[in-house]
Length: 249
Image (cartoon, rainbow, N blue to C red; front, side):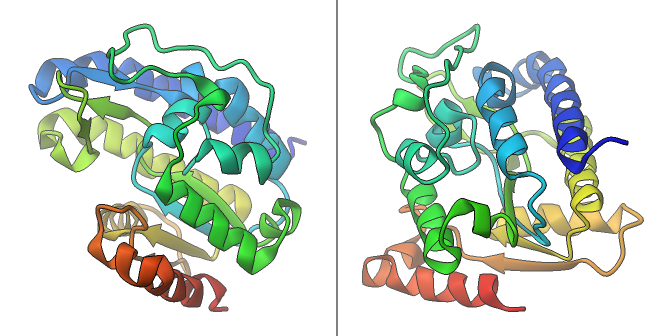
């Protein structure tokens, strides 16, 4: 019988392949998208390590983000601020490949990326404050993104999945929703805590079109510096709100 970890690795690899197959069409049908990286592909060794280390420790809550930023884009780990990935999650010394087509302003340097990701630093920092070591944290939570692709326009600016045309993104969003519900079923998750309003909307749609019952969808503000609330009181207000939701039984 397959372990939960084996199942997670299997469905995530398949999910990655399905999304990679749709990259070319997304670029062709969305004039605002010039590049689409799939960290689950070129950083698979890192993400697989994450699944194997932390995917079967007993989590009953998912913390779900929207899509990769430069943290996961470099490390392959959701909200993957390189410092936190190496020092907190203890995922180190792995060779991260590069996407085949790279924007000159969006070079992938892997786990050695020097640039911090504030959102990831805040999320993983709070998780550590609440639970302590990752071996204990992942008995309670599991972290993932709804949409796996890191997309940019011709200037190298981020393009978030809500900026995709409805017709071109229908199939990939269906895959994203299916993946979320598959993870929920494998881990027997009771709560999905969504990071930001967009992630919350996606989770609501996913559960509406599934046969999953008794799943609670909750929301915390996004910790990005682009969110004014996240910067109030030097991040203390965001932390207070997020902590109350995450710790709520």
